[in-house]
Every structure is written in C-alpha cells, then in structure tokens.
Length: 222
Image 1 (cartoon, rainbow, N blue to C red):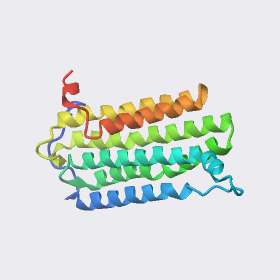
Image 2 (cartoon, helix red, strand yellow; image 1 turned 120 degrees about the vertical axis):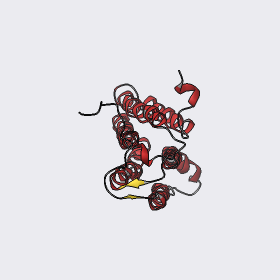
Image 3 (tube, rainbow, N blue to C red; image 1 turned 180 degrees about the horizontal axis):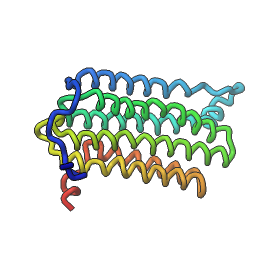
C-alpha cells in the first residue's frame, strides 16, 4: 500500500549518511570566492585631469550593482548558514542539492556585471534586458532551496532533533515566494520600467534578509 503524497518517511535515507562539516566548509568557501569575484568588475574610471569626480559618478551604477549583489550574497550566506543548522547529517543526494544551491550563488557575478554595464553604457532596452536577466537568475536560484526543504521534509531523520518536519514544510514558503516575486520583478523591469524592476529585486533581497533565520513562528500560526 503506497504512502499518502504528504506523508513523511522517518526512516534512514538510502545510501551513506555522513556529518555536515565538509558540506559547511565547502559552502562557506564558495560564498567567500563569490564575494571576492564581485569586486573584480569595479574599475578606476578613465578621466582627464580634473575630471576624476565626474568619472567616479559615471561609474555609480557599477558601484550600486556591486553593493546590491554583495548584500545579496551575504543574505544568501546567512540563509544557507541557517539552513545547514537545521540538519545534523547529510546524504549524497542532499549534497547534490546543496551544489545546486551553490550554483545559484556563483552565477551572481555575471548578471551583476551585465547590470552594471547596462546602466553605465546602455540604453533603456539594454537596462530592461539586464534587470530581467538579474531577476530571472534570482528566481531560478530559489528552485534548489525549494528542493532542499522538500528533501528534508521527506527525510526528517537528517534533521536536528529540535527541528520538526512541520517547521521545514512551512519554510518552503520562502523559496516559493522568491520564485514568484523575483519573476514578477523581471517582468516589471522588462515591460514597465527597469528601475522599478530593480527596486522589486532589492525589496525581495530585503525580505530574504529579514527572514534569514526562517519565517517567524507567530506568522506560521496564522
């Protein structure tokens, strides 16, 4: 007799189970490299004597893109750190899912460079494309987080004893929100105004920052 679709399996997952120390160390290293790569696209502007301030102001969008992405990576790291605190063991499958999460993080420097270039040198069409690309990258980044929470819900034996499968299930609302609202931000930037799309992305980053330790328990009771 098959289990109900929403039923969890509290038995040990198939395959080898190991501690999370190596996963945590590797993940922290990846995030550190991503943050370092972001600064590579910052450059000293070309300028004539007496025009340095003007050159720096012209590069303002690049600096803004760097700050937004630096904060974004920092928020991702805080969320990832909180996520790994929920588990005491990992499996090969969960390690692969974690690589998916890290893949989403390592691509951030590319849409950041595109965004900076579009707002520094491009026209409105370039800016629309850049914001849409950034928002799409952020939306797709939410997908492996959803898979991660889904895997933990199905295998609660991997969780710390203080963490209930119900808590993990409710936390899936955050990546679902990311998929939907980042996508809407991209559409807003493409069809309406790129600045509005960028603001929508910043609002979503703020949301993930505020909820980096998980959705508040008082909210989950409603």
